[in-house]
Length: 409
Length: 181
Image (cartoon, rainbow over all chains, first blue to last red; front, side, top):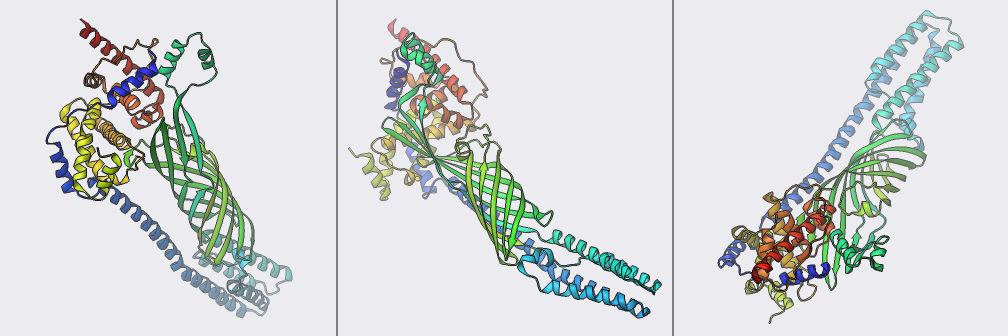
């Protein structure tokens, strides 16, 4: 007999079958319900509340880390400035001592005072577009090691040579400039760390509808039944779908929240890493003739992004940049809700993503910027059986918006 | 007779007796579903009890799609709970790939076989076989979903189903032959 009909016959035969339940079963169920009159046997509720608590603790920990990190750097800021002031005073004091030793040193005094005069306003009067080059505190602990020997050298040089020429003066100025530039660069790279807190989602939902393929075993029977017929020859080129069966998929836009830190290599180039949480929700509808079954699959991922950003342009608090990198996702929880019943599923494999984006940031304060980053992400197939947004839409535009805290500004 | 919709409305309005009516109406069906997965009565009792506690406490989440959808939902919860139970008790054999049989079996007419005999026969199949057969035939779930649920390959699910139905067909044929002699 036809195999499909045999399965249907078996299904129909069993569909209405009933076996009397044990007599005292209801009493036990009632007793359990009395103990847990509200929602589902407390285990489910407890699990949910534990998950909720974990989520809150994670969020609180992230905020605490942000505040502690920010607070630490903020707290150190005055000390850095104090170091700078001390260093400048040291330079001035040493220079004054040197100057008083010989008459010829008056030229050196003029040079040093000129340098100090140039340094002081730089710390105070920064134009926004020049901040990155000039605002960073000038001297950190190394100052005591680097600046002082230099002045001592100057002092001895000046003391020994009472007939200083313009060329020698120029050398001192150049040396002073070189050291100051080095100090500024070192300080800037060490302190203009940025911390970002952002939300991101994809631009599109994804809908698809598939027929249900006949199972291999059924196909073999089909081929046997219709041997030498047109249907069997058609099988060679076309898949066989079950009539009246359909699977519809709707993948919601993925939503991500992240906390990242950017470390600058140079004025323009920086490396970003951090942690990202992503949630993927998909609705599946199975249509079997007149019956429909709704399922909702939720996948939770934690990811680690690594990307390089290159600043293209900066003007009056605005800056534009491009960014490219990878994101590695680990699936931390997966569940499937079928008509209100939740089931845990096996976890997805590691998922990679390759991202490219262009961003614009506006600094509302010198230390706080708002940014928007449209981009494009590619998710290569990780080979797992889970159907999700990444698989249905491997190349997807995304939009990231967030806050960026700039330390050292 | 009270429709499923009327029963749901009574439950949702807080009528406690309606919970008992739901149990009375579907406990026999739930037992039949459960026994196809777990033939041991003592064990299936726990699964049915747990399933009904879930059904009665999560009925607020059920969305009504017409007469019969409540029964399907009950069956699905029992089926899911039974699969979870089998997984928890490690009844599944780890199977990577099972080669298909070259010839499909000759399947007998099951019109004359009582459903309780069919249930018993399915219960005697190896756990993997009967789980996949139940999910595919009774729950009408596609192999993709079965594979996902059991953590096996889609092709393995298909092969297990093929073997299960072959073994079941053989047992049914033997039963029919015994009845005829």
